Length: 130
Image (cartoon, rainbow, N blue to C red; front, side, top):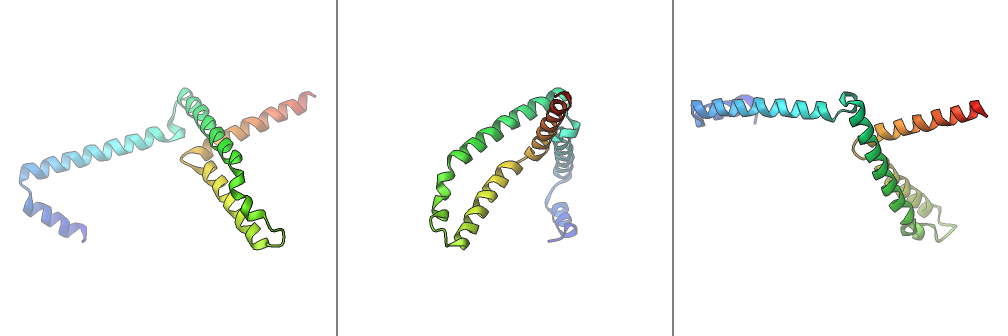
């Protein structure tokens, strides 16, 4: 159904006040959605908000990684037979896929990248001073 026919149906089925109310609700919804999207963007956050979100994200990543590495025994059946390389490939693929899901969930890549930049800067400073 295209937008013109749906607009005609709306015009015929709704009263003038209902159409006016619908238009008002649509504009409010669009404004709130844009504001929410703008506030959620890390580039639009204040420094305090960014650091808090960065710390929270790092905590959640560490928890997920701890759970992931503690449950690596789930994948041991892929590596039982040393001659079955196809099974090994499936096992490695499944491990890397689950690891990738942990790293790329929600806005984690931005905050993980920031963490890696901080770590590399700290290592650079350590190397310069030694």
